Amino acid sequence: MTSLIDRYILKLFLGYFIGGLIVFITIFLAVDAMSITMRFPDASSASLIRYYLFYTPEILYLMVPVASLLGVLFTLSSLNRSNELLALFACGMSLIRLCFPIFLGVGVLSLVFFTAADQLLPRFVQLKNYTYYHEIKKHPAQYSTVKTDRIWYRSKNTIFNIKTINKQKATAEGLTLYQFSEGWELAQMITASRVELMGQKWKLIKGSMTLFTQETSFPLTQDFDEKIISIDEELGDIQSSFNSVDVLSFKDLKRYIQKNKEAGLDTVSLEVVYHDKFASLIAAFVMVLLGIPFSVSSNRSGGVMLNIGFCLLIVVVYWTLKNSSLALGHHGSLPPVVAAWGPNLLMTLIGLGLVARTRS
Image (cartoon, rainbow, N blue to C red; front, top):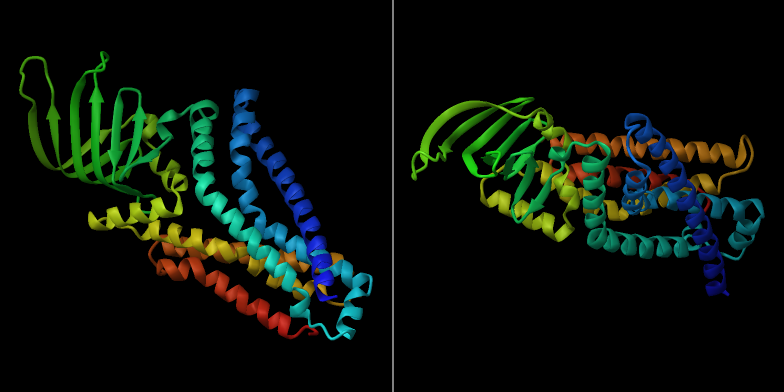
């Protein structure tokens, strides 16, 4: 009997969950497509289709917590409206016990989506970014990739790599820049231990400049403490387009952080991203827990629509709290673990408190 009820509740939840994913993905794609076409009216239809084909898996992963909230909300609300909840309570089943198949389903779904995202999503993100910067925005210099332990960029006759970049402080560490002639022969190499990114002017600190000329077979090298160089316009805002860690898997990001630590570089922002990737695994659980109290409340004074409004408000509060916490973590105001896990812990405690006040 109990297993039959569990399957019935799980079936209801999965139906609403899948429906929620379809609705939210469709709305997101429609709104984002309008924005992209307005910003880049010259983008071809083929490029836009490729872009959104590569973008859809990422959107799907991001919408799992919201779809889980919608699933539990409509599942329990429908049971409540049909008085099936009342009958199940009369049979001695508690609210938490009723939600067990939902939590089990969310756990399996979260694990499947997390594993798939970790293994497959980095490649889709890389293809999406390539399409965006090369075909839609037409600024290929702002496209970056991570190879081994360095970040590589290319713009016209310039190729350079860096160890790491800090968007908040507009600085980079471990720069090696190669400039080539029109015949694609190496003309100049510049290295710097640290760079201050100032738009189209970069301030290089403690480095060297090597010139390769046809007049002599020996390169000419000169060290410097500080040097300001002019950068191509496309590279002037390179820090705002930094997205390389998005194309790293959980394991690769951990290795990347370790290599940067061994080099003595600042890895706070990278550690925040690392812990946030792991913390996102339980985001769907948090959403379900927050949705339960509003789903089973009385249908009076606004009914289900009022409950949906409360839940959407909580979702907004949750994401605002999470983004604010991550921002503080990136700036070093919060430890990476606290910045990533703090919002989940706080909202979980709020959810448990709300459930405790609900009939069990």
